[in-house]
Image (cartoon, rainbow over all chains, first blue to last red; front, side, top):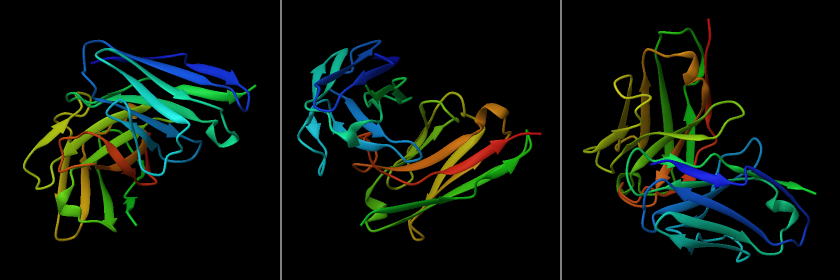
Length: 106
Length: 121
C-alpha cells in the first residue's frame, strides 16, 4: 500500500492552522497513524487509528479521515511543532509510511 | 518509564553481517509486539520487520526478506535484528519500536534512540 503525503513541505507562522494530507493507494479503513519527528530524534506517536490522540499529545493536534484520505490538523501552530510529520498505514504488512511533510518557520 | 536502547550498529563492508539489539525496560516486554524501523540519512522512515509478543509471527519488508531475521528473548527483555548480506542501501539509523498491543495493532507507541549502520567499502 503506497502512502502519499502532501505537501512535502510548508512554511507557516506561529499561531497558524496547518493541515497535512495523506492518501492511501487503497482503502485502509481507519488504520492510519501520524508521527512527529524532530531533527536528531526518534519519531513520536501523535495520532493513532486516524483520530485518537496519543496520551500526552497536545489537543491542538487532531486527525480525521477514513478509507483512502486522511488529514492531520494542527490548530494554532506552536514553536515546538516545527518538525517533520509522517503518516503510516497500519492496515496490512508490509507497513508503509508517507514520504513526510516538513513544517518550517515562515 | 518505557525505555528502548538499541546497540550493535557500526561501519561494515558490503556482504557482511551485523546483529542489532534493543534492550527494553519499564514495561512487560512479553506482552507487546516489537518492530524495527529504519531511516536512511536524510530520508524518510521505512518499516523493516515485526515480531509478535511471543515470537510466533514475524513479517518483513520485501527489501530485507531473506536477508534479515527478527527475534526476541523475553527472558532477557531484548529484541534482535540479524542483518546479513548487507548492501550500501541498508545504510540507515535502525530504530526499535514497541507495538501498542501484542503485535497486531501496528502502532508504534514508543521508540528507541536508534543505532546507525553504515555499509561501505
